[in-house]
Image (cartoon, rainbow, N blue to C red):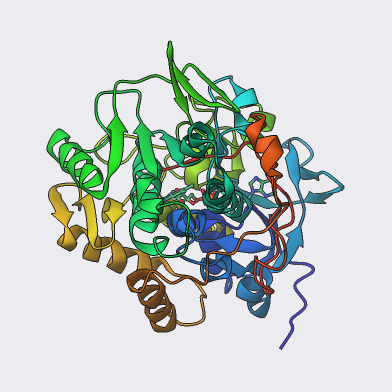
Length: 457
Ligand SMILES: Cc1cc2nc3c(=O)[nH]c(=O)nc-3n(C[C@H](O)[C@H](O)[C@H](O)COP(=O)(O)OP(=O)(O)OC[C@H]3O[C@@H](n4cnc5c(N)ncnc54)[C@H](O)[C@@H]3O)c2cc1C
């Protein structure tokens, strides 16, 4: 039954990612009117984006429409681009309008950083949105298609070279998954090329991949990647990227498909608050997750800079974002009840990076190192418990298990324009595609092709 909520305090939530969605879910029953604003119409399960990018899962398997998730609970959903916040006027500035609020929860996350080299974005897309994943998948599959027709061995070689820049969890997961599809899924599909000959090159600037993990886990991850056939280059700094490939100083690695998985920058919405930010542009929030000097504004998820009990910054991970969203909602409810707000406490269940089917490395509860199948099983369990509103968890699990274990072919659809072979031979960059409605299944549609995108972990 619809209730008249017009006179209730208005809570505006910016962003329908993990943090924003959890804030909304924990405010459903409070005496407030809630409006959630997002530039996309869907909530996205980012931890599995790399599987869309490598044609293992379809976009609709990892995204769910926000209206469907929130509408039945009386939450208003607005599809709009947030430009900034006018804190004095208590207004959210949209690209095409504005909204007033009594309480504001900002959860617009992070975006890619090319460290001042934004011109690289065209040649090396990042992975943050469905559009990014579909574009990377298109480039990967198209490279195999073009290599099949190419007669010049050098050009064919550069088409079959895949470079991933950034050896954090996203880069490692992408490299492992690319190696698996080229070794296991694609052979047999082509006549003139052997996809197993594809070179997957992972470049990391510091001495180890997964540098946030203890050294022994990083080394295990490296060995597992190499076993899959990934060439791991550590201590190598990329100095340029163009349509011909990647440069590490004087060295040139010819490659037509390059993916950027290094560097994160906070959502630009933070800058409009006029408050202190950390080096990554995140808002330095109070322990209660409010913006200092603005007790009606909460910042949560990847956009918030806050320390855990151990004094270390809370990592940019999905569980942390969910827990912050929940805490912001609890504090709004306490404010309405005239009770003091409570500080945020991060409960670290663990963080994992998947290297291949049945193989991962990670740390559970801050101290238990895991690798191999047990780590992969723990990763799966944690991710399934994250799942929000995706039909049923069991159905999704079965679906994923099927696609994952059978190397399903259904996700290997190419969308966007077909490049001409002569243009490729002239060394021109492959034309960018678009996330077409054919592919981004009917329930989920992309609304804004994101500019150079982000990588968070
Ligand atoms: C490829 C990848 C893999 C990852 N893997 C893992 C993993 O395995 N495990 C893990 O725990 N974490 C993982 N993460 C990190 C995790 O996804 C993030 O920590 C989490 O999504 C942060 O949640 P958030 O709500 O703060 O931001 P997001 O989930 O990024 O949500 C931000 C929302 O705000 C919207 N938005 C942004 N700007 C605007 C604007 N101006 N106007 C309107 N709407 C806007 C976006 O559309 C989006 O819906 C991964 C991230 C990526 C990119």
